[in-house]
Amino acid sequence: MTLLHLAVALDGAGWHPAAWRDSAARPSELFSTGYWAGLVAEAERGLLDFVTIEDTLGLQSSRFEDLDDRTDQVRGRLDAVLLAAWLAPLTSRVGLVPTTSVTHTEPFHVSIGIASLDYASGGRAGWRPQISARAADAAHFGRRPVPRLTLQELRTPEGQALVAELFEEAVDFVEVVRRLWDSWEDDAEIRDAATGRFLDRDKLHYIDFEGPHFNVRGPSITPRPPQGQPLVTALAHDVLPYDFAARSVDVVYMTPHSRAEAASIIGQVRDAQAAVGRTGEPLKIFADLIAFLDEDPGAAAARKAQLDELDGAALASDAAIFTGTPAELAELLLDWRGAGLDGFRLRPGVLPHDLTGIARGLVPELQRRAAFRTGYQAATLRGHLGLARPANRYTVNS
Figure 1 (cartoon, rainbow, N blue to C red):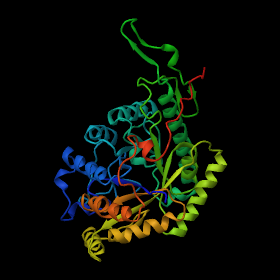
Figure 2: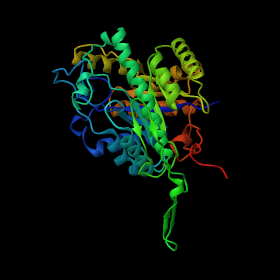
Figure 3: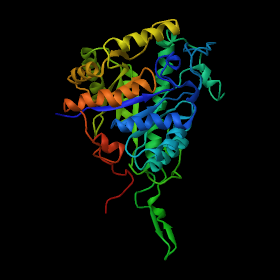
């Protein structure tokens, strides 16, 4: 039996807006190093493939178009790349995948940040690029006008044109980053003190990228990362992001609400791969689920209902919401896997409670079904997913 891949998405106190008010939450520690160190240690204890760390260019908000005035929900985050780099030496196997915007940032800076994370972690870095379509985010930078659109307006022709432009830019952004990672050949550093040669200059390459969004000469200031190409991942909900994923990333997260819908989306993703002429490794496809887990039947649903009451509304999400026991979630994951999924990215409803439920409840259930690893077999994130270290595009074979 092919083993499932599991990741968790970490965000503040959890994915329920009222999670910080749960009796098991630790809101006073959300910006402490010990809190995050405990989360990634728990993920590694559960032998998970990787954790993703959320980030945005603006404060969290219950509205898409601008900031709200709510004071009863968590606001504020730590920088995801810096946080991942701090956590890297505290772990030894679990992958670390921070999120960055690709709309108001520069690919050169992101490339060296993720490459440095790959060095700090010994080859366990990943990256989740995301676009920023909010006018409130653009206002922090003042470099480009972004219209103030609601989510409904984002679905109009004007809104879709904006989204299409942002994804076209994202494709170029990832391409620049990937070229910069390759701009040093693996043996560019000679480090021969006797001859005084530290570097073979012929093995550093100008990438000379020219496009409508970026003109980047290169090379990078950081040698090629240990993985060659750190893992690139993306969340996708529709045709445009499916196309972006097919062109640019290694792992795509999708948000089905049933096995049948999972099969349908997988078909669309595979069609996108064919349409863009993707070569090499096919996309790894993960499904996202929000998870509330308790051993006692009904306890997780009751806990979510209490949080809904505190927040003043039932939890709404792009992803399906699961409440139940670890055994019940294991059954659901194995059923949905039959649609063709490679794995799942679970979003714990409350941290650390539901992360513990995943690592100490769900994982043993999957192991009993011979569906999940009983120990790490690789030392790198690409290795966890069975992905080879890619050849450098600039190396000339002699």
